[in-house]
Every structure is written in structure tokens, then in C-alpha cells.
Image (cartoon, rainbow, N blue to C red; front, side):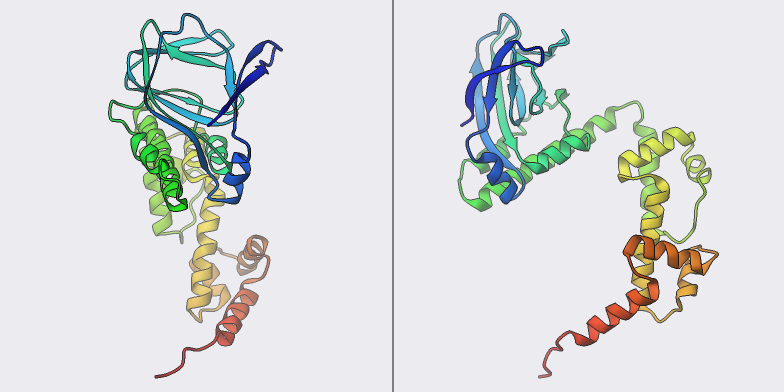
Length: 297
């Protein structure tokens, strides 16, 4: 149960503050990394004649099932939306949402923890109105959360994570750049399957039929890092596999991964792993010899 008290907007005006239950943040940190702190099924509220500023100490999803709704923010924007939409709200953002000239019937889930904070920081959970559809997509998480066992609470959080990621994927699929994004994702999958060639910064955008800036932006959005860093990490992972699983000389492994200079390969390997390729191979084989062997029958 969240706590309601008085707070202040950034401009110093009074507003309602919806606070976390005592200990909820600590429980989320020490447990799974995410905690559902409140939820509701089919809750109904009367129309809101004017915005009532408030903020949450937690993340929230409100899925409008019936009626029309509005979302207000202090910059003066008012967005009106229909049933089948959902409001995503992040901690600390002053806002108001509710029924627009009609009752507001909702499923809602409130949650906190470092995991949803990470989703927000990665741009995967953004405050605003999103398309949700009429299927009651919050119910699986809500019904799991009704059982207080640790397993059920983790299952509820997993359901909620999958839903958040699914909604973001649906949003991206509807965006004007969906075709370009699909081509970049296909390129990323190709690189993962075959990391050995070394592509230039001009070749990859050209193969995706994109300009360099757009390609780089979309690649970083999808892979989490720029193309050069992603390719090099793939190569180093492949180098580790060959160092451990074969007797090929270090220089040959470097050449196979398109490093023309074996010293450059060794320097980059050490920069990323902390030790040279030869030392890595030696340590892994030493550890393998020291591991206890299973007794023969």
C-alpha cells in the first residue's frame, strides 16, 4: 500500500506525493531487483474536473479499460486518450491523469527497484501515453502478485518486465524508422554469426542503405554500443573460444579475426581482458588441470 502525503512541485507549489511503503526500496535492492508495491483490477474513478498535480516515488502503469482519459504535465500539455491506451509514469515526475469527462476504469501496477530504474535509464520505459490494446495485459502480473510467496512475486515481476519490453518493441515497430531498424538488426545478427571480417565504417551503413549518422544511432540503440566497439567485443569473444578450444598460435587467431598485425591483436585483447592472449590461454588450461576430475566407475 503506497502512502499519500503532501509534497512540492519543482516550482514550490503544493501537490500530492505518493510514497513508497517503508522498506520497499530496500527489499527491491536486496531481492530480485524489482518489487510490485501496489496493484488494482478494474478500479473506477469519477471524472477529474481539473488536473491535480502529484508525483510518485515509484514507476506505474495505468491501463485504461473504459472511458476517456487525460495526462497533464506542468509544462501545460494535456493529452487526451481513449480506452486501450496506458499511462506510463516514472518516479518524481509531477503530473496528473484521470477521467476526461467520463469515469476512468483501469488496471494498474506500481513497482520500484534498480531493475525498472535501469529500464528507464536505457530508454525502455518512458513517461507518457502508449498504445496497449484492449486485452488486459497487466492481469498476469497482478494475479501472480496476489500470492505473497517469493516465487510468485518474482514471476509477477518477470511478467511485468516482458510486458514493458514488448510494449517498447511494438512502439518501435510502428515508428517511421521501423524498416531501417529491421535492416540494422539483421546486420547485427549477421555480425554475431560471422564476427571474423573487419567492416569499415562506410561498408556497414551502405549495406543497410542508410547514412552513417542514422546507422550509428540505430545500431547503438539496438546493440547498446557503437558498431566499432560491438564488432571488437564479438572478435574478442571468438578469440577466447579459439584460445581455449584450439592449439592455434596467437598470431594465427589474430589473422583469422582480420587483425593484420598480431601485436595489435594482442594489445587490444589485453586492453579488454587485462591479460595477454597467451597468458589467458595458460591460465585457463592451468585451471582446467587443477579442477577435480570425476571418479572413474
